[in-house]
Length: 94
Image (cartoon, rainbow, N blue to C red; front, top):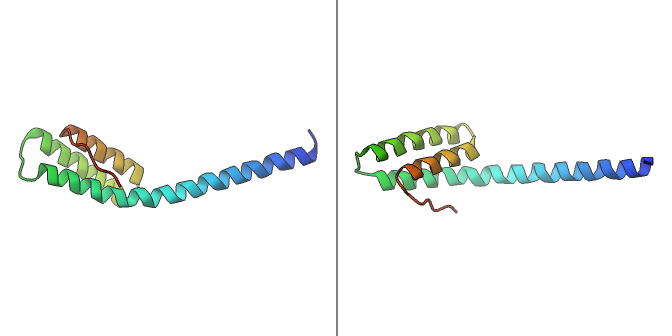
């Protein structure tokens, strides 16, 4: 393989890495805004309820909120989805 071909390959890899980094940077803030909206839906759906499923959903949602505050937004969204599943709630995402 010639030096020119290697350089082109390296340049392509750099461009790919930069593109992936950009996507990651944009996805994080988008998820950050999602977490509080999902939490509110769970809280609204469980308001005034004291059954075991509602309590479990609120506990899981609290874990999700903690993850959100730690900046772990993808994990937070996953927790919110788990909480919603506990009460058979279909979350509306923006």
